Length: 231
Image (cartoon, rainbow, N blue to C red; front, top):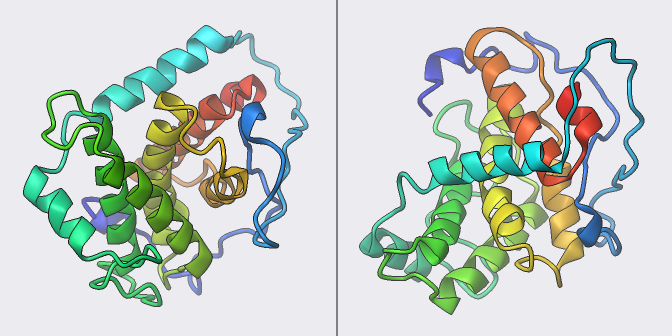
């Protein structure tokens, strides 16, 4: 990843604090959870806030819309998308991805998320040759479910708390922020994806702080949680 020099130390040298779940799910996706994969906290308890910031639906929709616009600045080409589809089996696994990889750099499972993100963008990009191709919609959903089920982790905290959640944020921005029906019949998958996204909590310094803040901001807006946006 481009933040290679900012990835920080391993969990052994920089402790990542133990914390309760902050996973937030849009109201229309609450309900059935994944098969024992996660326990969601849907009711966020506000922390004391002394500032004077007003956040409404229009503000949050604007944040999501602007982030979505950025995602379409680069959409993988037709040949790259077709190659990704060819490498995926019926379970949603990509044959060239080692989901058990724990590498501290060039973490394989992150590439799987990037490929899924590419599927979602190509599916909705107006000028893309594969726009509206139902294969992409189904492949993105199936591949995301497989990824979640594998529960991959890296030995580098950066991938677990920034790299992976950042890619998940982009996927959910399309699946939830753009096409709100994409996961309407998969509330368990939606819940698990938001649970994974919740691993990103604003802390640290420099590029890491900025990345985490942006991940958590979009997360809060997607979930329609103004209290977390203000925080």
